[in-house]
Amino acid sequence: MKPAPFSIRDRLKSFQYAWQGIVRFLRGDHNAWVHAVATVVVIILASVVPLTKTELLALVFAVGFVWVAEMFNTCIERTMDFISTEKRPEIGLIKDVAAGAVLVAAITAAIIGGIVFIPKLISA
Ligand SMILES: Nc1ncnc2c1ncn2[C@@H]1O[C@H](COP(=O)(O)OP(=O)(O)OP(=O)(O)O)[C@@H](O)[C@H]1O
Image (tube, rainbow, N blue to C red; front, side, top):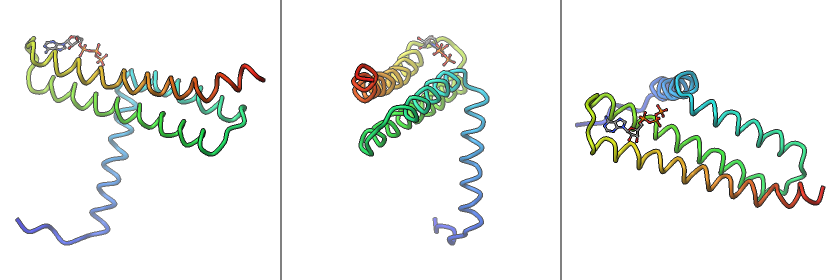
């Protein structure tokens, strides 16, 4: 199939759909609210504790990493629920692995946050 010609209007529409996806995720996913609280805590700490550019980059990356993991997890959960509402061990496995990925991301972010903030808060 021949790809459609490049169109700025279509690219802007895609951006609009993606933005809509973020808004729908924030409105509809309770885990998003937990991440929002954690993100606000990181922003508050980052604005009161002096940070190097590298530390700031590590924190931004860690926070984004968790949000991306949670959004993909939500997509996988919703896809599974759409495919079948029956209890199936295969679906349970897929959902648990996807949730496990979020946990890995969250633990990684917590370790990064601990490495950056704990020494500074102790010496403050
Ligand atoms: N259709 C299914 N078949 C088998 N096991 C399922 C199914 N749906 C969910 N489970 C399992 O039940 C448990 C809870 O699933 P659920 O989707 O409610 O997770 P949750 O993290 O509590 O959801 P949410 O992110 O919406 O709060 C998980 O172990 C999951 O793997």
